[in-house]
Amino acid sequence: MDPREFPTKGNLMLAQNSLALAHQGYDLMDKKRNILLKELMNLIDEAKDIQEEIDSTFSRAYACLQRANIENGISKVQELAYTVPIESSIRIQTRSIMGTEIPHIKYDGRQNELTYSFGTTHESIDTAREAFREVKELTIKLAEVENAAYRLAGNIKKTQKRANALKNITIPMYSNLVYSINNALEEKEREEFTRLKVIKRMKG
Image 1 (cartoon, rainbow, N blue to C red):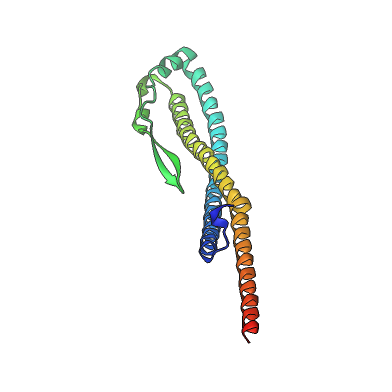
Image 2 (image 1 turned 45 degrees about the vertical axis):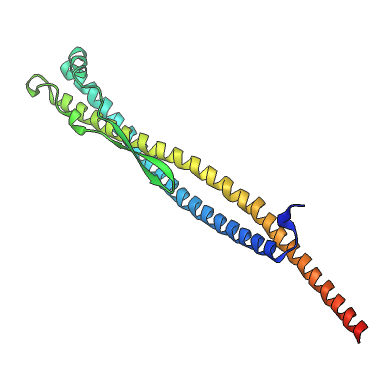
């Protein structure tokens, strides 16, 4: 038998304290899970809105590109495309939501400055360039939101596991322990009371 299960008043107090802590832990886990779920739902909605915006911006960007190809010639557009610098300014920072590290992406929009002269191109090139710039910004934003949602979902799963362990294993275990120690102590008290009565009767 585990010494902590011996029916003593000290063990009863320890079991009651452990049960109170387990209940407190479960409440905290439940609150954390609800906060994370709320954040996750917001991110899912945000990702859906960004995805819709990307789809419509992509369609517009390709239509602009098609027009630019017709007005300037595919080889000219291709030549201009090679002047666009490779994006190298993206920096990933993190912030914490209830212990979950969430990415926050920063990038330098100055890399979108003109790399060709207005005099040698049609307006369709500028429109296409601007539309694809929007697509890039929206894609960066979507990557940030989707990654955050993925990390939150992982933390929600862990939190749910811990809450379930407390609810289904730890709390019932300590509840049973408190109940059995309490019963054993009450039984002891009844026996002691009966014994004292017998002794009193014998003395009388």
